[in-house]
Amino acid sequence: MKKKRIKVNYKPLWKKMIDEDISKSELRTKTGIAPSTFTKMSNNEYVALDVLVRICDVMNCGLDDIIDIEKS
Image: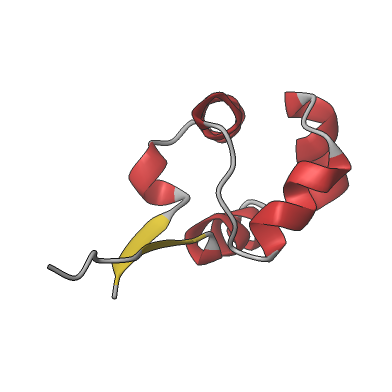
């Protein structure tokens, strides 16, 4: 049985940030998230759920508004 690989994609977050005119540095300051975490997100790598929750809290949205899950 072949294991399905699940990928994350943060394109919805980047689009939402553009729509709301908020920069990465501004979001980083408001959430207290490390620059290295934003680097991981820029590379579509996994980050901790609490990071995503903090972003949702600041952006006043849900997880499905900032992340896409892709099965391959």
